[in-house]
Length: 131
Image 1 (cartoon, rainbow, N blue to C red):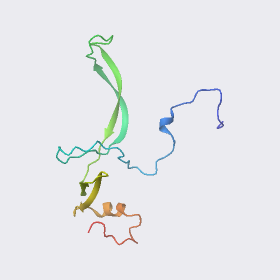
Image 2 (cartoon, rainbow, N blue to C red):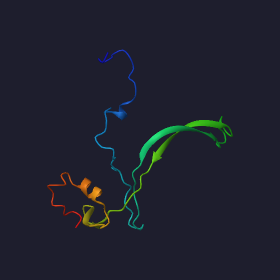
Image 3 (cartoon, rainbow, N blue to C red):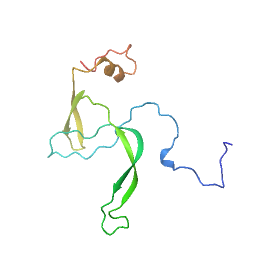
């Protein structure tokens, strides 16, 4: 029956709600580390997909623990990282409010498939974003 149960504990935690199919296969990077002006420009994040889970047997090296120098079975997550292509560079300037975008330089080697995904409606657009 699909009605709400009032006398039994719930199955699973609320961190995985809503339980439904995602609208798109690509995820979003929403959190980035704080910018450090002393470091040279570098890649701050990259996208991975959860491909599955498995288990490993490893030796524990924790002095004082019950399982020190013994084999322990632990679950592990397998992540898959697709190949990445740099399509542009964004320049920022420091303002009293924070970092603001100065400009974007797009690469010229982008494929037509990438440019089609950039627009909501490819046929009706002027297609001027990468020129």
